Amino acid sequence: MVKRLSKSLLQKKFLVPVVIAALAMVALSSVAISSSTFYSFSLSVPQEVTARPGETVTVDGGITVTGWYWLHNFDLSLDGLPYEYSVNPEHWQDVRILRQWNPQQGVYREPENFTITIDVPSDASGMHIVTVTGQEHQSWRETSNSTFFVLKVEGGAAATVNESEKAIQVSDILVPETVEENEPFNITFRVENKGSEKTAVAISVIAPEDWTVAQKTQYLDIAANDSAAGIFRLTPTASAGTVSLYLEYPYKQEIINFTREGPYLQPVSTTTTLPTTGTTEPKPYIVELYESFKARLMEIFGTDSALAPVTIGVIVVLVIIIVWLVTGIIKDFRSGVGTGRKSEDIKMQGELGTTEPNVFNGIDTL
Image (cartoon, rainbow, N blue to C red):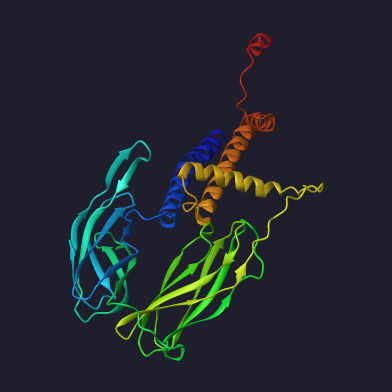
């Protein structure tokens, strides 16, 4: 019986680290998949570049490694640029992690720099959305990332075009009838390209100066006879004013711009309301436990992106299995040293005639 108990304890003793190691590997792998990759990076370029026909312009960019390791065998490529260009350097054997420090930011990462040189022809015109893509070829993932900038070739004054001749039109503009002070609201719209060629469109929102706009200018690359929807998010102050849309796009060797006047908006001041006497329904205990557990994991990992449902599920299963194994070991130990098992062992020994001899038996026989 003791051997059987020892064997059970020994099996569970070795089973615990095996299960913990297996689930820990799954948890770590799910964290790595759900969070940023080991070889992640970001590209930075100016949002807009202006040039004139016949000029040679230089665009400065950077590659910042945001992952754990350097990038190896890394290439840069451009798309959407119809002119001759060169990228220097175009290929890296190693893209390093560069760190700097200052009192305001502490330790931060600096980018590896590159330049794009564009030869703009003398007959060039219009606006082009240029996509910059970087890709490393060393890891099994071959991680890639991209960004874009707008090349605007200005050849002179904008041409005057009748409304019927415009290839680009704006429709379906939706603006709330009333807006509240310091409360964000959305303006949605649709841009239609009725021309025969794909066209890059820059559309901006014009609002009172002290209003906050999440992204003041958006760039759309619209195919011929197609359309694209857009949205602006604004936060008004107490100031009233007109909200309008301003568009720019290439047309007949020039850049056309026009404005769609919007409504005059007067933000409504929000009044302070007294708190209600009603009580908030408490959350279930399991929900509070989950939220506190997730908050603790966020403190450990430092980011919410690493806490994928798979990761949390694996960790919860791991805790349950550990509790179950420990409980089983305690039960086996207690059942082995308890009175019930001890009396059964004594009874079994008595039936087998293996009870300990009584020293007084010898005196009786004498």
